[in-house]
Image 1: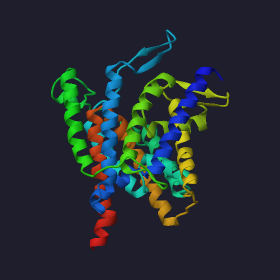
Image 2: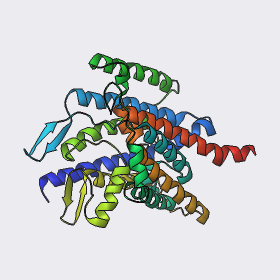
Image 3: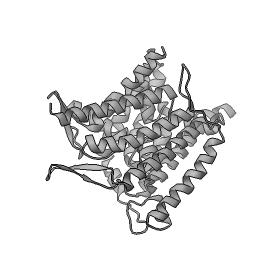
Length: 365
C-alpha cells in the first residue's frame, strides 16, 4: 500500500467519521428539517441547514478564488489547480428528480445522509433503505429506467452562455457580482437564522442546532480541499455517488467511476468517496455508543415495505436530479449552482407533498 493510498484512505475515513459523529450528535436530517416546517411548525433544523449552507458557500468559494482546489494530472504526475465543478442545469431532471427524492425520503424515514448515519444507531430499517436506495440508483443509471434518465438529462438550459451556471450568472459576471450575490444571500439567510437565537454549545446528549449547522458547513468546505489533495479530484460531501461506488467496489472490485481509485492492503479498491461513505456509520456508532443510544431497532414488516419502496424512489430521484440532499442541498449549493438550488427546492416540495398525504391529510380526515 503506497503512501499516497494510505493518506487517501486515512483522509476519507477521518472525514467520514467526523461527519457521521456530527450527524448523530446533532440529530441532523433534512427529511426532518423540511417535514417539521409544515407538520409541527418547527424551524429549528431548517435554520441549522441554512446556517450550514451559508458557511459552506462562503468557505467553498474562497477556496475556489484562492486556487486552493487541485486535481491529479496523470500525464504529468502532478497536482494542478482546478475550478469548482458545477452540474449542468437540466431543469426537467432537476425538478422531477428532486420532487421524487423528496417524496421518497418521507416514506423511507430519512434523507440519504440520515439513513446512512442511522445505521450506526442500530436502526435495521435503514439497512433496508440503503439496499433500496442502491437498487433505485442502479435501476436508473444502468437498468430499465436508464433511457428515461438519459432523455431527461438531454434538456440542458443555458444561462449567460453557460450550461452549468451559478446563481450570480443571472445578474452578470465577475468577482464583484459574484461576491455581492453571496453577500446579499448570506446576510438575508443569517438574519433568518439568528431569529432562532442559535447557541453554539453542546450538552451531554447532543450538539445544539447552531453548532451542528456550523460544523457540517465547515466539514463541507474541508471535504472540497481534502478530496482534492488526497482523493485526486475535488468532490465535496455526497451520498449517492459514493454509495454506488462502494457497492460496485464490493461486488466488482472496481468503483466503475471516473474518480481516481486507491487500493487498501491490496484486497479492496475504491475511490476516496468509497472510504468516506464506509466510515460515516462508524462515526455515528461512536457517538451513539458514547451517549448510550445504540440499540437494535427492528420495525414491523409493513414498515419494511414502506421504507424499501421509499428508498427505491430516493435512488431513482437522486440519479435523475443529479444528487441527493447532501450532494445538491449542501455540496452543490456551496458552489451556488443553479441546478442544485432548483433541485433542493424541488426536494423540499416533494417532501411537503408526501408529508401532507402521509401525515396531515389522515389526521384531518
